Amino acid sequence: DLGANVLLQGQLLSSLHGEGSGVNNECSNHHITRKVPEVNDMFARATKIFQRAVDINPLFAPAWCGLGCVSTDPLLQQHAFCRALQLNKTAPEIWSNLGFLYARHQSLDASASMMDALTQVADTPLMWIGRALILERKVWASSVVGGE
Image 1 (tube, rainbow, N blue to C red):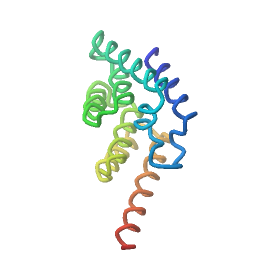
Image 2 (image 1 turned 60 degrees about the vertical axis):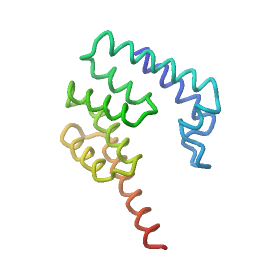
Image 3 (image 1 turned 45 degrees about the horizontal axis):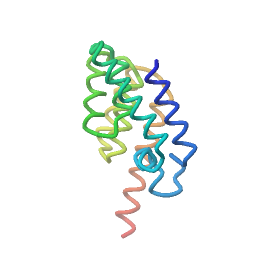
Image 4 (image 1 turned 90 degrees about the horizontal axis):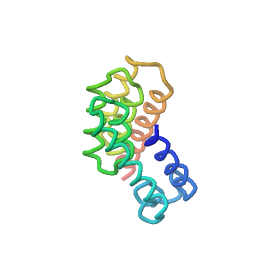
């Protein structure tokens, strides 16, 4: 709970500095953590808390999921989400986080597979948000390729 609390505080602080606004290419958490020391400190603190939780109980899926959420390394994120899924295959937030990770890195087929798996686990808004994101990315990609 402490790690999630610190992560949410960091996300709120990050949103105050424009994260997710779409105004420019420097509105991601990655860019904001480099520009705003307070945000960087929050995410670093959350990372330590989730790493400590994993050290204390490596079979606690929420700790692995939190570690994946707070990390900026895509390989660590994937590893943490996959480990969390090994431990708890029914948690919709893990499936959706992995799907969003794949979508963010243009692996749309893998992302769609995660959203398909999510439909088997729960009826959640995350599934529909993920599907919309995938469709939006596919339409955007086809307009860029078709528009040239």
